[in-house]
Amino acid sequence: MGQVSRSRRRRYEMATYVILSRFSPEAFAEPKDFIKLADAVSSRIKKDCKGVTWKQSFATLGRFDVVDIVDAGDPKDIERAAMIIRSHGHSITETLVATPWKEFLAAL
Image (cartoon, rainbow, N blue to C red; front, side, top):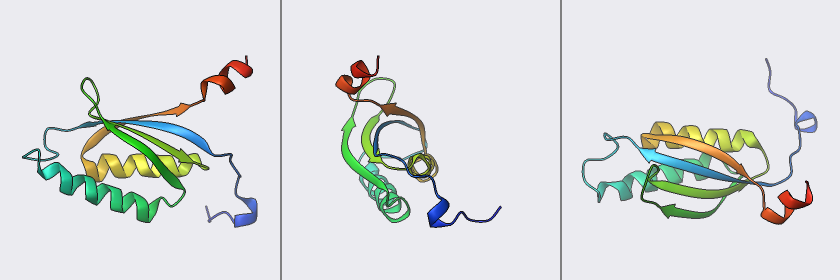
């Protein structure tokens, strides 16, 4: 399969996504090593996923270590970002589409 021309690409509205990440035990040896890992993953995503806009990131306690809130116009960009987090960040991810509450209620 060849690459789809720009005129034939599907156009998407900007959507908000929540990326939940959990580090593997092998991700880093010392907590301070996480800073280098996070910088490397962030740089790779900025380079390879230009359609993704990072809104906020949170460190969390519980089942996931990090919650990222991002916007993207194409789900493929989010898939690529999640794969970078998994492979370069040595993490397990779960990605959710987030609908603003008022929009959700209006659609009912």
